[in-house]
Image 1 (spheres, rainbow, N blue to C red):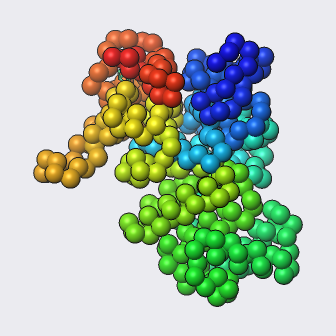
Image 2: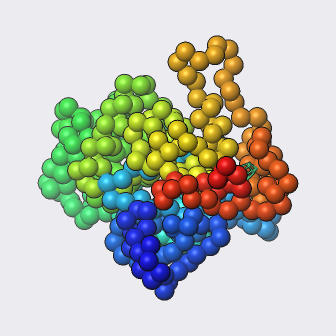
Length: 347
Ligand SMILES: Nc1ncnc2c1ncn2[C@@H]1O[C@H](COP(=O)(O)OP(=O)(O)OP(=O)(O)O)[C@@H](O)[C@H]1O
Ligand code: SF4
Ligand SMILES: [Mg+2]
């Protein structure tokens, strides 16, 4: 990257005159994105107000997602994946506050604003649908609110969206209620609703975790299709590392509210440099592996505001030494696309 203007990992142009560098940011994301690309997250921190004091739930995240790229966000329960999605979407509850900067297509998303170009797909689509309203009502409502499309045009667009997400009888589906559809069909409706607003960024928070394997594969195929057709950038939250290895372009590993490693699936599966990533991968069940116990990571993710002050993983890490308990780990560049935040990542 040149000293003044350069291209970030995501292809986003950077301008050092507006640099927002932080020691917490990966080196490739230490500057502010100022021109088109897709999502640029810079030093995103989410604070939770607690008994008159604030504790960080998510801390200094910086990453980019290009147009038509799928980036997976992984990490144990409680590591801050959903809060990250909600912060990007602008849907944090009032007692949480975000700092840092978000850019979509080069334009900054102001604090507290729900991004019109961002849509979210949830694990439980039925929970987000009104049980006494038809699928058609939901779609037409979104088309009216987000795109001012109404009447016959809205009906036609809604049918087209349902067809696009693979519902065989879209006209009939328009008249059905959420409880009349299967889990997989409701997830397709959830994706159609997300696409109705014509977003450029899709935040998919465990969209397939409640589905059987066949339906899961169909939904992943569908996400790949809309990503290509609409050039969508997708942040895909999952616990399923198998899906990550097959489907993601890049992976971000989170632990205790922080990013600890990022790279391609191949980088992380074949050459994990952060002990937490290595432990996550080692805990995967393997065909032909040892019988009996799965290899779990001892201990649990510290709650916000608790746990080790420097490396958040230090009290669970078999490689922890004095340095880890005294100095915050730096970002180590393994190669331009592979970074790990650990004192011993360089080996
Ligand atoms: N509304 C809330 N109020 C208080 N704390 C919250 C709230 N939502 C999340 N948290 C806390 O923030 C941390 C991160 O939660 P988050 O839901 O983002 O985790 P996650 O990585 O999505 O986990 P999972 O894989 O279980 O979905 C957790 O410690 C959680 O308890
Ligand atoms: S910095 Fe130290 S404690 Fe943290 S992951 Fe690396 S080796 Fe383990
Ligand atoms: Mg979650």
